[in-house]
Image 1 (cartoon, rainbow, N blue to C red):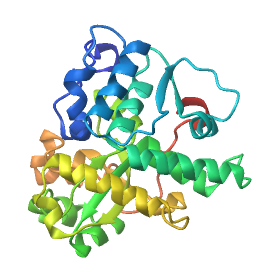
Image 2: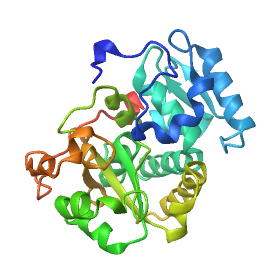
Image 3: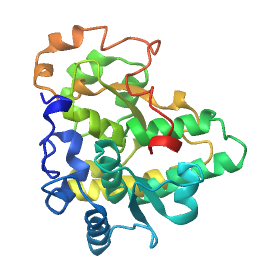
Length: 282
């Protein structure tokens, strides 16, 4: 696997891996010979709108902006997303905005409302929002028994006994931009934070583009409910390399015997829970 010192220098060159499926439509237009400049970000946003993506009219990724307000408040007030130059984390954040426009707007609105409501120093709502934004994996399912296996951390049942269900009755779509950055150097122990969303069986017969569009609208609608995903506990640990098709070694059932990775309880925090405040990094 690539290490952080061996990252691709062409920005359409992220790996051909299911982790990057939902930003794949931007691969060609996002390709740059060097780190993207302001004009590249503007071109991307213009292209996304031309493709029908529902980016807010004033949405813009502003290189190296230094807002006086909290990061989330600045986005909510101006539509500008502060974006650090020469930074993989913020680059993938921009691509997530293009792929999940409804959900990203809804996530920002929740953060703004929480801050305005007095949660300036971070509380459960903002913590949950940060985890979803940074490390979130949306898990659509049409079989409640599979959702229960994830909730109960029954990894053998979920990943081995029901291996064929992945892509037909349950799936995984990455919205967390920190995961996309970390995916450039995948390693055993790498986890995301799963958010379960029930869908109809027909969902799994849609194209990848149609699935993403449906999930984006569904997630945004659910996020309008203040009780939905209002605590970090509502986001579930998900060992990403256990997902069938995401890691060659998991073809062997013995891979899942590693209980240091496939833990039976939620005692340990995932590697992606300990992220910096979005007021600083986005």
